[in-house]
Image (cartoon, rainbow, N blue to C red; front, side):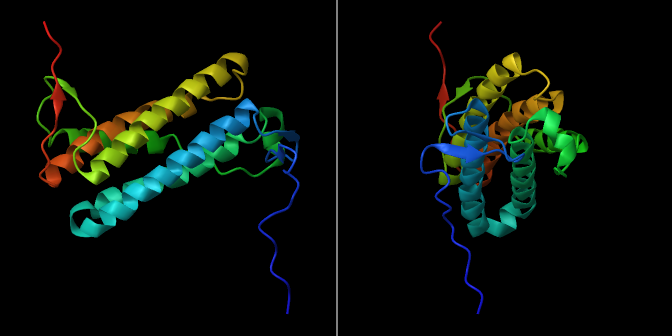
Length: 194
């Protein structure tokens, strides 16, 4: 019987890891930081999907969208985990620009069912909506890191990557509002003093 491969390799015990190209680098490398944040966001999305599956009839289409987003985030992470000059030697999954159009269409469809915004929304409501707000803020954190990386490495980050991440935070915001509405939760708002 063949032995099962070990989950640990010990190659990172001294704080190094490998990029997709095989290049060794420290684990605090900016590139590693970004795709680590993407992985964390993907895990948060997984938690939302688990919560939504409890109301599968209400959120069946939304769950499908979330799983597609998770797949796109894996693709995005794979592109960030490889230096631009070494990507041609690897068969990285394509980043499909049409996904951005579909995401925008989904945002518009959700938003059409929501009341107009007159005040700031306080994050919260149902548990699923609260997790969606965590996804939104985490996406903004990734965006900030991408912008910083892009300033120093403009050839590494495509306009699609920046647009996708920016639109993704919009999606989480609108979907959080929609989730609260479907689940009958009141939105708490903040109205600044005039």
